[in-house]
Image (cartoon, rainbow, N blue to C red; front, side):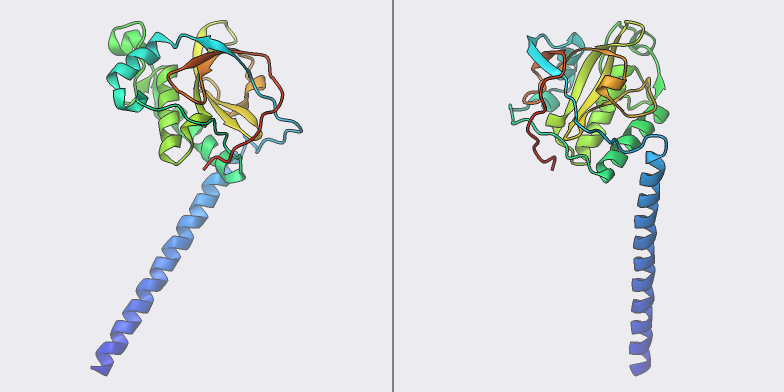
Length: 224
């Protein structure tokens, strides 16, 4: 009996050691991923964050309206208080990781090639999508990771060629950053070279607002 007890204790100690080693390896791997994610996309050092001016209410894009018909539960939200993300180094690495993963995992395709229609917003669960589909995926991934919906805003812009384009704007205490399938780095909005047209309201994703020049810095609310 004593020998069996000692063997059981030794086995338990060995399993605990293995579990601790696995946990340490997981933590180390996570830290390594965060370091790799920040390479070439360093944590922003801004003296005074700038924010896009929010204008009058406007109509949502027809793609969003149709999306809400197909994904009604996701759009059946109540108005809420605006929330900005507190941009820690971990939050920055998470945002960079999500942007990079989606841009690499999803293959670009037009809605006409994909669905046979001019415009359709959908999750790219089959591995293919256009700019709005990248945005929807990145928004969903960050929300599933616990990020506040109120800080993750689908945004319509004019790109450097003057064409219509969609990006995900993330509102933080260090300014507003853009996750974009046409750009590998996460950039502050003023560095994109885009003209910002309209986006979701922070308080209601089904309400859209026009965009303009940057106003004064607003008060910050914790992200989580």
